Length: 207
Image 1 (spheres, rainbow, N blue to C red):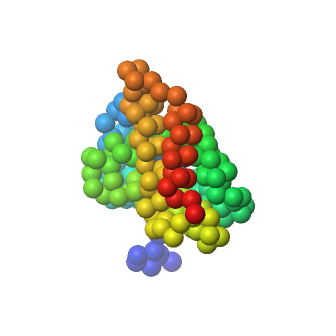
Image 2: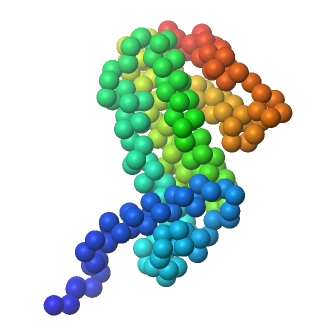
Image 3: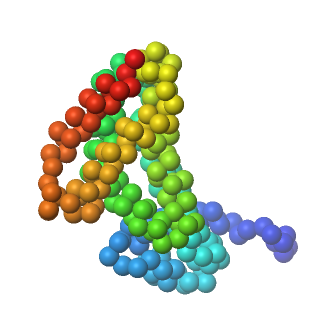
């Protein structure tokens, strides 16, 4: 019996997921321009096959970032306090910063650097990076800070503002030192910077 119009082959979603996984390597390789042909070669398929599953390069990129978000969800859940209720504000925030920094060092930095670089090439790719990596990080921090605000440990501030003011300086410093090579011309003690930043943040936001 012929397949009804509009239905997909069995295994369509599994194959699409495998192709999105294969696209992550080229996406993170900032030494080479990103192209649909390059992604297809990495996946071992033809360009028409990639178009069949994703339409275009923006579609492939969005699927790859969404897959990275899915793979990072346990990290996001722990960061947000969903898996384990955080302790008092000061040790909780210090733990948060160490946790994010450790993840940054073992591969997350490369993902964010690639997301920014690819996102500046195309507005849809920029949105894919925001949806797949940047917003999950910020929203997880917001969720943890919301717990502290509910307890009365945080001033009655906008948690979005508080999350941005906590995370943004750290991400900029880490990008400067690592992904952008700033450590070669202006090295800094990243641990000391983080500790000083957290101390200042706590003075400004703790109840």
